[in-house]
Length: 355
Image (cartoon, rainbow, N blue to C red; front, side, top):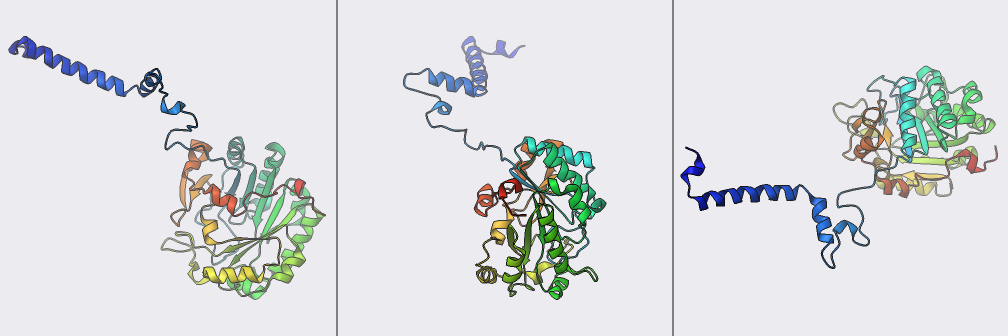
């Protein structure tokens, strides 16, 4: 016997009404836009999203624009700097055309500046790979700024002759003007003199109209050094001075390839170094706080690296999920990027330098 036959008619009707009410409630909850518009029809009412001054719904954020990107396309290096925080954990390098595809995607998403780094970017294919990327970014993508960070040991004048026109800035890492200190740090390479090579690269940058920049990591072995005279003589467009930084899994921790604890200095020591060089007008300082989250870093797989938790946590590759989605996992702090002077005159065409 059917259930309805076991009940009185009023009981059956009540049960059907309860079922119908539940179904209507579910339907109503599935139509929030309709609810908002219905509210708008009532006198004196507007739906919340249409109120004057209202922005996006709570929790929604405008997509991050990758204005300035650092692409570490290789982890391999010919130096062994003891504090290195992007170590040779893989030997992978994307095929040239795949790298170009990713760079074009970044340009489409708003990239204005690309910086190629490593590892040592001139190690792979003796600089031809990075040269082709530099040419592509300037000639095809027409980026306002294309730069490279290098230790300078493998750059030859013939590279400038072939690719110098396409490069805006060459940054050379130099942590000391005392060659013995460079050897202690790990920037020694046999009989080659790092400081002498730096001076040669400065001349080539002037000869081939490339803006010259110096990067220095201030650590236990150079924190008391006075570099005023040498920096002013080299006259770079920028002297980036970084406080030595620990990154879990890179230069500290069980799975790290370096043990950088012995290189670490205090905030007070870093400030003393900066104060000693306060007359150098091109100095741009970056403490640990400024560095950690203010860079958009792509690794060799074109994955954004999030450093907010003190280690590099990768997103999925932009080649697989696109820039807009991947960049959400970058941990990028745009306010700190601007605060540290991340946006500056970075195209050599606008620098008005005397070559």
